[in-house]
Length: 180
Image (tube, rainbow, N blue to C red; front, top):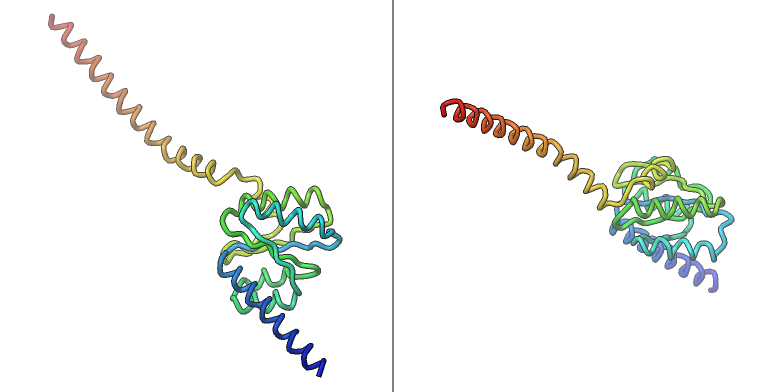
């Protein structure tokens, strides 16, 4: 009787975890995988709080669940192969740059935390990609850089046209002065 009940509870638990991971995968397209071996629960709580400030969340569950759900969600096979050891999933809702910055900073302060990689949309990323992303400026500064790059040619064109008009005005003035 108790083994039947334990099996039903286990099945119910697996179903709940599966639904939660699927819900989080559906609400965000970017995921970072971490190995948290030898990270204390206090340190993990600090990481969770830090990630919450940048609109990301952490979920820890069995690797077999993670692999099965990633396969069912048709996530890249390369990402599935990163699930190894004590794995934590970081679900990125909005800004992968800020999340990468938090993760990289935390991993520098806690050497036991290892960045495995992850995926942005359907593109597999490595630890090096995440470190590179963390070095980018904020989304706002990237928008400003793009706007500036687009604005520069227009500014040069306007200045060139202004110089042509100024030269024409000088030439007309010179002709006018010569006729007087």
